Length: 135
Image 1 (cartoon, rainbow, N blue to C red):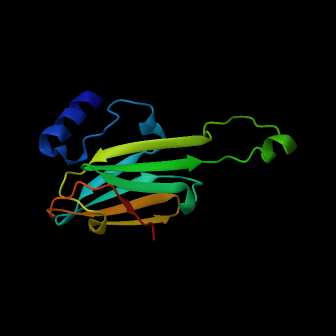
Image 2 (image 1 turned 90 degrees about the vertical axis):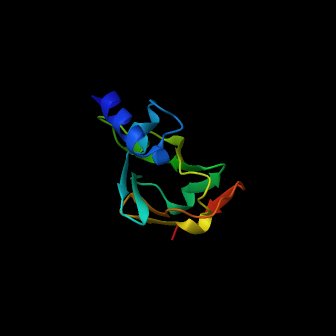
Image 3 (image 1 turned 45 degrees about the vertical axis):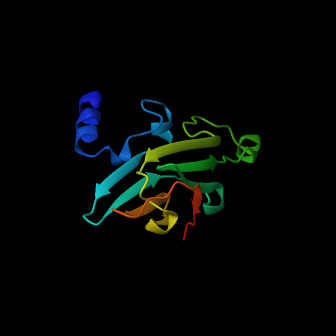
C-alpha cells in the first residue's frame, strides 16, 4: 500500500519527492505535507530537539533538514532504562522543492516538538546554497 500511495503522490506533485526514497530516516522525522493553495506547509516531528540543533539549507532545488537528537546519558547512570525507542545522533532528510524556491520563500518555526515550514510557490529560479532561519 505504501508504494501505491507514494506513486500516487509522485504523479500528483513531484515537488516533494524524497531524496532518500525508502529509508529508515522517515521514522525519525515523520513529515506531513499540506498544499495550502499559494504555499505548502510541512510539519516535521522533532521531539526534544532544540532550535540550535536544527539546520535547514537549500541547494539545487533540494531543501535539506539536518537535526541532532540528544538523549541525556546521565539518566542511565541514576535510573534503569526499561525501554528506549528514541535514539541519539544526527539525522538528515531532503525534499525536492524545485529550482524556483529561495530561502526568502520559506518560513520556519519550531513549536511543541514540531518544525513547521511554510514554502511559497512559483518563485524565481535560484541555484545557490542558502540557509533558512528558524523563528
